[in-house]
Image 1: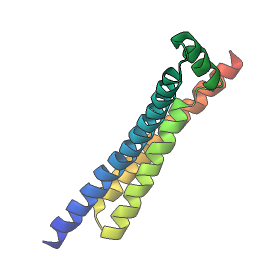
Image 2: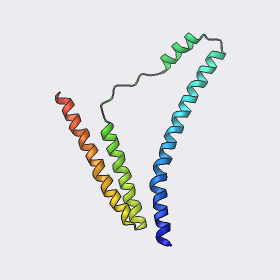
Image 3: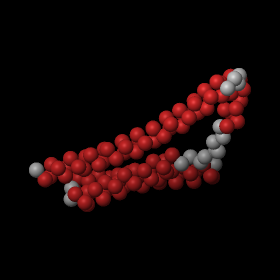
Image 4: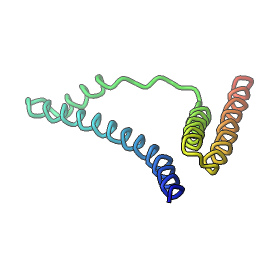
Length: 126
């Protein structure tokens, strides 16, 4: 019975944690979009023309600065973080499957960082 509870707790933490983080990100983006639409609605209600509102929104939106290609680095960093979380959970509840998944995830995350490093070096020399 105790092993079943540990396994269930492990599954809940490993699956539920990333889902909660994704939900927080989605809710934040939704709230930002909602605030933008509320500003547009207030401007239209105040008697401004749609063209004027469109110009105001373009002025308010700051252009995103150019970024380096860091997708592989960020993905690798996230996978390494999740692997370390799996390692901690595995050590706490003493489940060897968590330790094995942490090792595999750590290797995969390091591989993603290595791909980013190689691509970044190649883009600088090209």
